[in-house]
Image 1: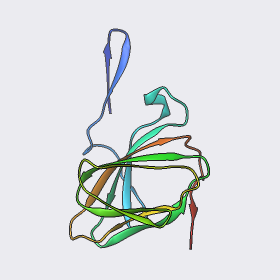
Image 2: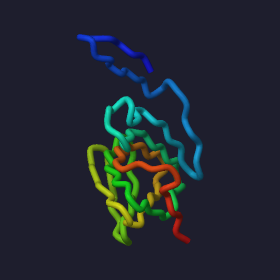
Image 3: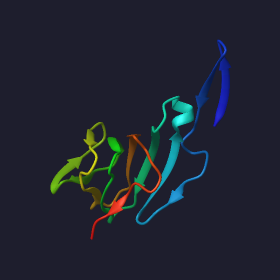
Image 4: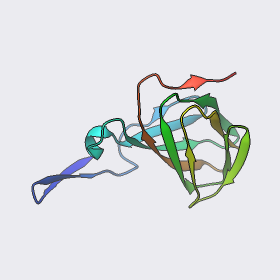
Length: 128
């Protein structure tokens, strides 16, 4: 990430192909902006990539809200038992305590942005 000083404010400029991806079970994520960058406690902006024919298992967050904006590919995000087949340009919001996950049943990578509010550590609860 590059910091550029303009009019006495720090501008954050980040390239998606730079920086560290965090490998998770069936997907990877990269934090683009954190609460310090956004000047708003408990917020986070990240990108998620799900490999073809894989999924993010059902889970929920007690306080966190997540807004999903689809960048590439087509896949299903499920919330509270309802499936939403999403494509680039679609947006979906998941509220606290709603069980959700994703399934990439296609042959192409699925990529989306997640904007999170009320972020707390260890706030993901996996459902069997």
